[in-house]
Length: 174
Image (cartoon, rainbow, N blue to C red; front, side, top):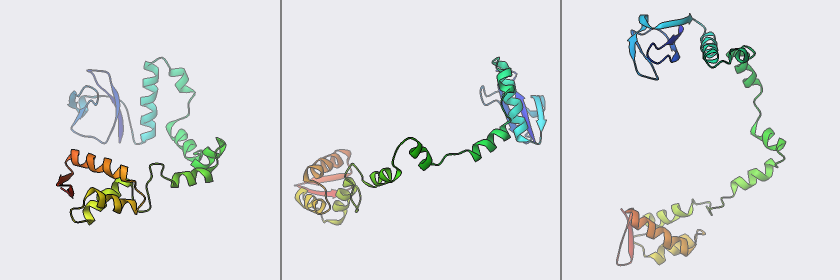
């Protein structure tokens, strides 16, 4: 069972499913026994309860006539389910080439490679190499397409964050 109830403290309207001993207003938090709450409608149909609440809210804002012109929630839900446009249709209607977009999506402008992002490659070097120097990490990363400049910056950032320690030019993960 569904009920549209109101709060006597703040005039908020909401929908309750089932029947509990007490109810709490989601807006102001006032708690009352279910039986003492003002129930505007009690129904087995959740769509009917939604329609009643929406109608009451529209009337409060002086938009009752506009609301009356709209279809019910169940009708609107059916319209949406039937009328959804796929991403490809939307992009093509916008004049974009979906094949070109898919190819661009496969390229990572940040320079990721088949073996992971640049940061992941530096981190993997620190895990796989035994207390490597910056040069050894740069060589490892260079074989995987990561520049020495990036390795230097990444090691500095990882050290500052406390993820890596450096002692006498050798690095290790913490």
